[in-house]
Image (cartoon, rainbow over all chains, first blue to last red):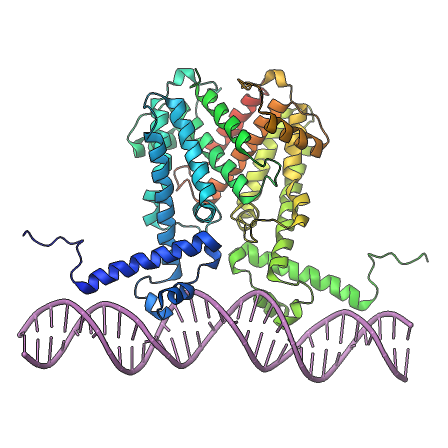
Length: 236
Length: 236
DNA sequence: GAAATACAAGAGCAGTGCTCTCTTTTGTGA
DNA sequence: TCACAAAAGAGAGCACTGCTCTTGTATTTC
């Protein structure tokens, strides 16, 4: 046998610890899904585990750390859902891929409203998100940038009437670099705007801003996605 | 003297009551602006007023009722800011009015981030907003619908490729009726989408979803507003 | 002036996050 | 093998929260 790898448990105790870490996360997640982040309580989780509340502090240093765990998990789940939706469509069908991504976001959000509120609602952990979250948070954006890189800028319905602001151009180039692609900057700017629109819509729908004016909102959502596809020049 | 009107204080006590109601709301508002909705505490407000916490329950039946008060105030403040911005532009300058509205929303949100988070972030009072809030919440939407009613549908850059979904058309007609106007349904649908986009952008910026990728976001915001004006066919 | 009403205070309940101390269990190096 | 260190769990306790109930005191109304 080779040398023991580091991620393998160093004994019964390490194994138990890993399992309890997962249990805590699992129960926390179920409480989140049922009652929302505000109602998440360390003591309640401890009760469900049959532990003293103080014991949990050997696993998560604070309630916020636990919330951070849930935030990362939620970002990753949504990110995976979006990546999967994108992967299931023929690579050359850009309109189909974009549509699949939009619907994946909305579907996941509606299936997991509290998780969505946790990551796209008002920040609960102060204004600086922990660094560990940004990797997972970027996944959806990276998929969208990936599509933007494949879009022919000549088909764009709306081009800037004036040259792109140099600051903005620089920011967009940085986004390209982050994703390791070289999308046209006008396409990319449009993409960012439609990205805002997508999550703005989902937030409006989930948070009740539409006040039942668009209930169900399926038709409006489809219309919006279709218009976005036209704006990209992807409609055949 | 004529008969006493009902909204006039019925004595010293009623006058004191009205004043205390305002004081509570004022202090609550200052705590909200400083620490956010999650940190809002009835007991802390009572302390600042030199009252026992139980005394406050004669004025607001619960913390949620107090939060509802703050929600309505915030909606009204944003609504007034948007209405004022719109009113300051020449009525026939639709592009200017739209731009002024967008900037009014963003400026107010950046000046009052906690208030913005309270009304456009994750709902804190469960999923059904109290009925008293919707009147104030609608003000921004009504201003936007008012502009849509004045827009010539022939200038629209993107029209539906297929007839509007009947459900959606009905919902849009209801929105028209709510505002007492008769905007073209394609213009209105585009308006709703740009409405989502506006608040999606502001939420992204305020809640940190851009992760400093677009900091400052002014250039991107201007670009987005300009593109929206083009989509409406308002650029000359 | 007497009765009804409004108000304020204080104690108390059930819950929260988190810390500290104490005991037991487990892993490890001599 | 055995002593020692590290880890884990329990329990008490602190400071805080929203909210209720009782008790005493002002004020308004009849």
